[in-house]
Image (tube, rainbow over the protein chains, first blue to last red):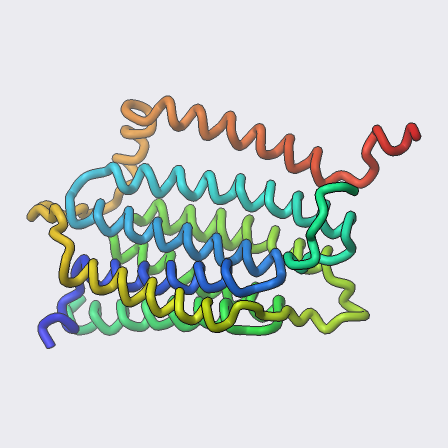
Amino acid sequence: MEFLTTIGLDHFLIISAILFGFGLFAVVTRKNAIVVLMGVELILNAANINLLAFSKYNGGMEGVMFSLFVIVLAAAEAAIALAIVINIYKTFNTVDLPSVDSMKE
Amino acid sequence: MTSTTYTVIFYLFAAITVFSAAFVVFSRNVIYSAFSLLFTFFGVAALYVFLSADFIAVTQIVVYVGGILVLLLFGVMFTNRIMMTDLKTDVLNIVPGILILVATIGGLGYIFLNRADWFVTSERLQGSVVERIGFETMSRYVLPFEMASILLLLALIGAAFLARFDKPGKSEQ
């Protein structure tokens, strides 16, 4: 009961572990490339929660700065990945990953 | 704010985050997944406020909800013929996926709770973090800051080059 009522580091770590597991599940099992991208975003969010939680319970600023850079990299990654997905759609007429099986146009 | 209210609000936002993330992953409809991802991002932003990183929470809402989610929705709209298909997406490797899901959450949870010996000090990050982010960005992290700006410029040019419609090499042929 003590563990449930006082919010500490472990609660945030468990939430981030759950988000990471869901993101990995989406990356492994989904066929649609866009949903795979959503899984990658979930994984990045889980990492961000971890960084901020350690920063909070350590009093330092390192985790906060790193999470800021992670958000920047996530934005760049989403833009490039969407451009690649649109190119795949123009070439193969689908975004299902198992049917993307050749590297020639 | 009393401790009970704090705890209740924390569990509320944690539940919103986890359940909407589960809906993102397990929903068969891509549009439902995208809109459920909205709630996940808002819940994660609320958790950032609990971690006293207010600036990161606002950045999360602006960048993820305003940028990445809109980009993902554009991707869904572009790559599905909405009139013909019903935007369903199939699932493959379901049994290994469930195994990986359970093993990841169980293993990470076990390690986090029982095995890990975190370096937790008695200091806490308190108050607003905006001013300290400004100082850190302009002193210790000025090189990564500039590199992030160059990377964003490169990603902008690269994405615009990749996604445009007629390639110059093709039109000459």
